[in-house]
Amino acid sequence: MSLINYYVRRLLKKQRSSRRLSLRRLGKLSGICFTTLASMESGKHGMSLDNLLRLAEFYRVPPSYFLLEAERLASIASGWNPNPREHQQDLAAQPDSGPIREEVALPA
Image (tube, rainbow, N blue to C red; front, side):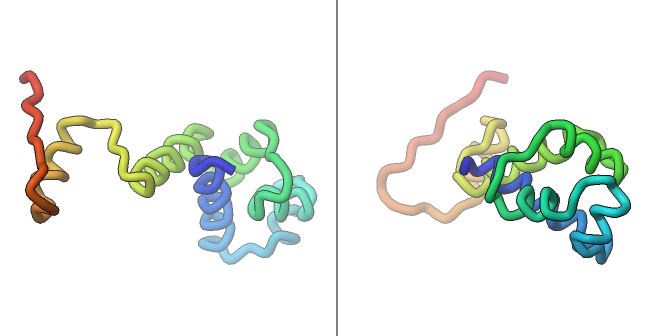
């Protein structure tokens, strides 16, 4: 399972938990079988785009929320930052980890 997939699953569970919904209750309210929801959160089976869209609509978040936020969390977890300027600032803020440390100047 990819990191992005892992974080999409965690975000789904976080949305449900923050609303204090059981899987059964969410299933009734969203029209998605609770066993499908459990599989989506646990990673036992793949998730369909249709179900992800239905949950985004139910939670009143843009459909892109799950993928973009999961990508952001995965990039943090893997140590990769897609914004090189921000990455350079992050490196400058960290204590020196040893004698080999190269700063890269980015064009303005």
